[in-house]
Image (tube, rainbow, N blue to C red; front, side):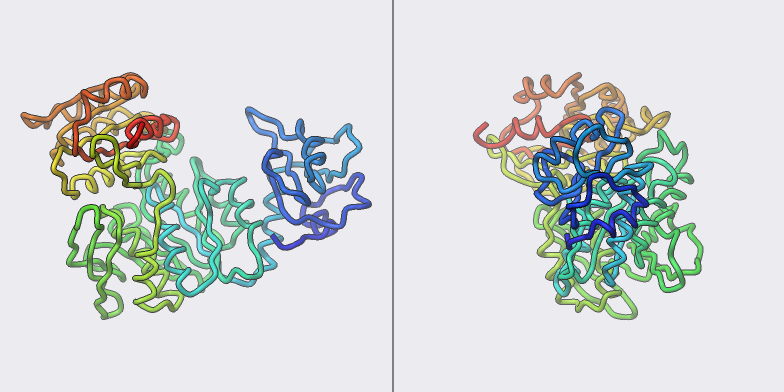
Length: 457
């Protein structure tokens, strides 16, 4: 972060200062008192399960220059008082972002948004100094913290925007005011709160709230919901596999663990590309990154280099060798029916001398669609002729029920109630040389199962 003066902070946040006479400014922003650096502003966030105000004194003792608080503090420490800490954090991030005259690109989607963001940043990094969202910093607190990492060396910024209700992305878009936005797809993630895919589409489209005629929306033209989006006051660039898309992939060749090769038709030209990870869904992710590359004047060779240099974020399609010469696909960061099916398709495309095994955990936030969603995943895995389907969690029986409708003769279907039960019965699930996909919602903590399969465990 570039240094911010205390007067700038007070003005941006409409704050009232207390004990700030000796404070000249800050060199960072933190919301966790355990992770702050000397000279940081500590934002005391009040949440459902914690209250940062309780750590205000400890934060200053650890080196924080000043505290951002929505409560009057009974302590002789420097702090600035605001009505709402999170809203003040947004105002400060918006002010800080305004100091940088660089392009801002925003990415959202029901699934694939993190991989799309990472691929996009990797392509852009071939020509520009890029700041991107790291980890899960894609919400009302994480996005501002990402922007505070901007420095004058950066030439472009790629941010991810997540949501689980209407209005959340609009708030983030107001802070960032991106000039380019990508929607990877519109599926069923968060349908429990949003009730319908129409509402999910509405929520995702909030990313374009502040676009003018110079803005560019990059949309998955094959997605049934996004294909309905009519021309707006801004430009629309569509990508996909079907005819009619502005950026289209053809001649797709799946090469298993080595990834996918395909040609891209764009503005009358045909170019060959290779993505180093499996799964047709990653062709879509790559197409959006290719669109960005074209939009920001990156050469075809640089785009290809950026795709080859792409590394997936932690717990997303990580492939490694496990115990007993198995191959593990660690995709446990999160899950919804669309991402589950995409991962199953990737598994089905990979060569193996053993069997193809799926270990599935529950998918959260599906509401009334939960039973149907879990059954559809089980059925899809059976259609792809997965050899072993092991499901764990409260919805495990529905996964197995869906698979049983299409079960082939040698297919093995098992349900478990807990991760530990899966780990304890691993010898009944996995054999030498199997390739194993492990996937479930974040709250299922399925990384415990992944770790049990690592070589040497």
